[in-house]
Image (cartoon, rainbow, N blue to C red; front, side):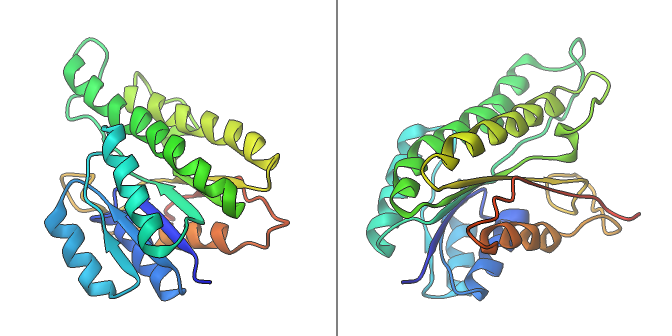
Amino acid sequence: MTKTLFITGASSGIGAATARAAAADGWNVALFARNAEKLTKLAKEIGGSALAVPGDVTRLEDIENAVAEAVQHFGGLNATLANAGLGLDTPGTVEGDPEEWRNMIDVNIMGLLYTARVAIPHLKQTKGHLVLTGSAAGRRHIKGSIYSATKWFVHGYAGNMAEEMHDWGGRCTVIAPGMVDTAFFAEGKPDKLMPEDVSDAVMHALNADPRNGVREIFLMPQN
């Protein structure tokens, strides 16, 4: 039976690259993001193994509906990539905008937790895999960075979930890239990692032999 991967933040960047890579590897892919137009375009590009399920990762109901539709459409769920994330336009604790902090925390932390909450009951049925997009920023201290602190949460949560999921044969992996050339940045970063570098890491974790719980992949640009 063909395996199914549910991806948040799937409309561009790492999420879209992973959707393409997984589909090329024989997976079904359920694509979740707010931009319905981009999702539909990507699903058409990939073909019949892709399903666009638009929604807002900060709304638990949206994720519940999207996962339910994906499970009904494809017959089950084998893996989830919680990839949606936001940065800050104005960094700093004193200088920053508390409303912007709230929006980032809602996506980077609450959206990730909502995704895990909805996916895990389905993953238990398949001894499936939860993959979280962390960051190099979640592995080191960066002066005053609130964004980095949200990624520290992702890394800590990933380790905790790896311990929990191990008990029922599931796996949890955090992917920790350095700077990636995506729309996350206002200006292009062509000398840094490409989204495909990160999707390669996701696929490595997903395709690892079941005896191998790949708990973290850390990748950095050479330049």
